[in-house]
Amino acid sequence: MQNNKYDYDVIYIGSGHAAFDGAKKLCKKGFKIAFVEVVAVGGTCPNWGCNAKITLDLPITLAKKQHRMSDIVEGDTKINWNANMKNKHAGIDSIKVNREATMKDLGMDVIHGFAKFTNNHTIEVAGEHYTSDKLVIATGLTPNKVDVQGTELSHDSKDFLNLDEMPKSMAIVGTGYIAMEFATLANESGADVTMLMHGDKALRGFYQPYVKQIVKEMENDGIKFIKNADIHAFSQSDNGYTVNYGDKKELNVEWILDASGRVPMVHNMGLEDIGVKYDDKKGVIVNEYLQTSVDNIYASGDVAATGQPKLTPTATFESGYLKHLFAGETDQPIDFPAIPSVVFTSPRISQMGVSVDEAAASDQYTIEKHEMARSWFRQATKEKIAENAYIFDQEHRLVGFTEISDQADNAIDTIVPAVNMHMNEEEIERNVHLFPSIGHDTWKNL
Image 1 (cartoon, rainbow, N blue to C red):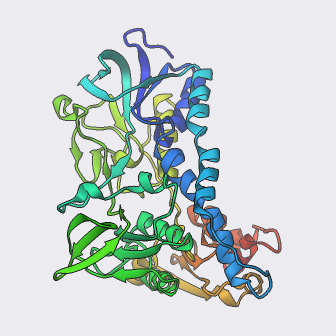
Image 2 (cartoon, rainbow, N blue to C red; image 1 turned 120 degrees about the horizontal axis):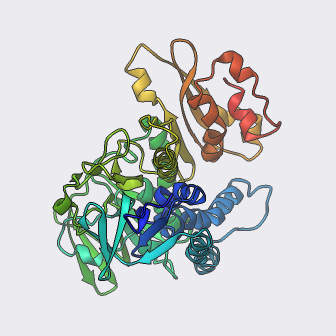
Image 3 (tube, helix red, strand yellow; image 1 turned 90 degrees about the vertical axis):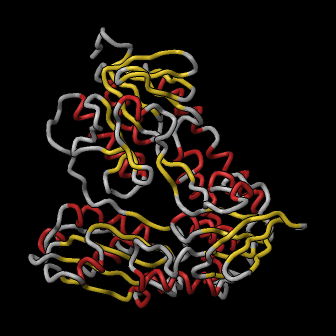
């Protein structure tokens, strides 16, 4: 499909999963596609997000497992952070180059620079103008900065994922996904970590009885949590930085990580000038077709205010939906499945679908909880904490799941089809899993 009125059929502002996953399929159908990328092709996830994080985490997971099994596996596993970081670069740095090469091989254009709308069909990048029938805002999120004196002295998640040497001490602002995961990485790699909490709860979107167990394990590992920290200022000191908080209290550390959240990348793009509505915290306002207030402009991924989890699987699903919509393969609103999420702490916590709290507040659901640490499969690797909860509707169809364990990410991945298809007992019985495996261990309680 080539619309001769414009340079392109679709321009994606951003080149991450919210754009590329669906765009490559449109390209194969004859659509003329371009991406605008201001930093690194591929976006946050592969360059300074999921891929980078999990590459650094895998040695941490190995070390944690060795600690648990130290009476069987002799020796002491110690993390060499510098070597870990070099391994991360070896696996990650080529992604943006390979992704761009793939785009060009498919016939898609990559425009490097910052995009600004001049009208609803035109963007300006580095003084050049490009027109398109449709445009998709897929700019994602950027790290938030706490509004305190000296905030410029703190570092963000991208800085952490490029640390050549692990500081001896670190203050982490926040207790969300990034804060909790990076605290786990830093602590196992030798840093003295202090968590500065905005309130008194960590990982607020997850089942709190499980979260409290994770916090307890992190405290057992030496990580300190300061509730209701009330940060006033950051300042430089002789050996690093000072955090002023609470009632004239001070914390001296070598490094400060601001993991207080992420905000939509919506500013300085000229959205106001062309009538695209957005919320500073939630992102670009879209309808059930991912369409903005300007009918030929759409938004996808973390920048879109859909109310869905801000996760790579969400972005991938949305980009796939737009592919179907643009190709005329559907005229229906987007129908989101339950999307799994996981926090890569130790132990991990995962969830999808109807939550335990939602189920407990309604008479429409039943909750079945299981203590999995007693399972022989979990005992084989000496897991200390392993629990899960299944949520069923009134017809005993599975509609939700959450788990805390060292295998919580793998466990929930096996359960995704059952939740999204709302399987009943008979349908579940027809799924025969490999034995022994985490899948069999997870499904046996259904």
